[in-house]
Length: 235
Image (tube, rainbow, N blue to C red):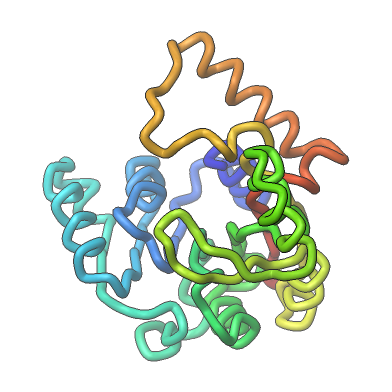
């Protein structure tokens, strides 16, 4: 995922340009902090007070220069117009958030307005066209059969949420003047690995990441990934 995002940023902006980044629903700030460490100015927007507290605690341990480039504020991705002026950012991230949003298209339109011309919108969503894969590979045939006919599922936090389809999001991005420029699959081979599983040794981990990256760019593998990473560019 990070490799894909870095690739898209490198393809859109001059080398060394310090970008203005908005991370909507930043969680504990992992991705936002990584970009701040790379020299970009980052604003993290998070509605969960506990997540926001955790992000601020991690940020407090960073060097002063990184802390100065990173602003973490409490807010909802559906209200970006309240916090920021249109065109305020070069890159807007919305990773693992849309599944919780009822009016997806309205929120995406608001995020697109935050982008300067040529800006990059990066989305990470659950793949509704592959919902049967996780239960099917786990041998839960009843759940797999149900998943073919729905975009609703229960996530690993036990919450009822919605998955999204590539065709639907492609149409939405075109309609909000941030048409899809690239898309990837994420978690093609590793979706059923438990969150608490230990990482393999460094050489095995590198091969795993290389295989996932290759599959995430290659048809038909990317189409059955658990997650989709979509990149749109503001016209």
